[in-house]
Image (cartoon, rainbow, N blue to C red; front, side, top):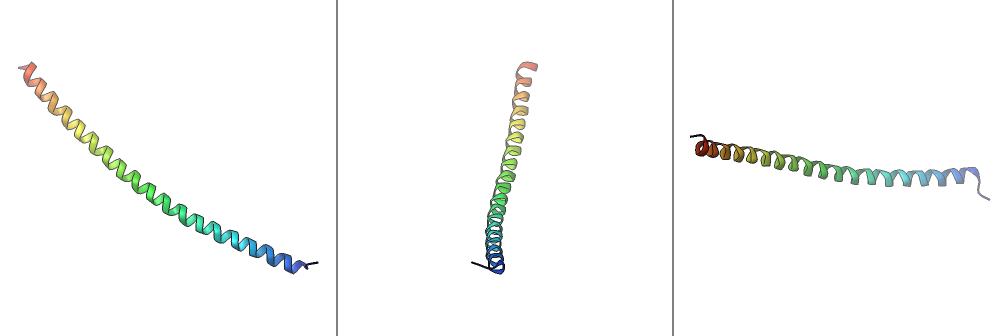
Length: 71
């Protein structure tokens, strides 16, 4: 039968392995989060651009209608 020291060493080995696996998973998830944040920031820029173009287009249409119907 194994002594207490052998069991402790095995458990410590399992814990070390689990910590190393978790560390790798955290690194992977951190990279994925950075990628998603980058995509989100790009999406915000595109959305702001769409709103600016739409407001400019709306102002131009409003001016044209004002000249046509406003006299």
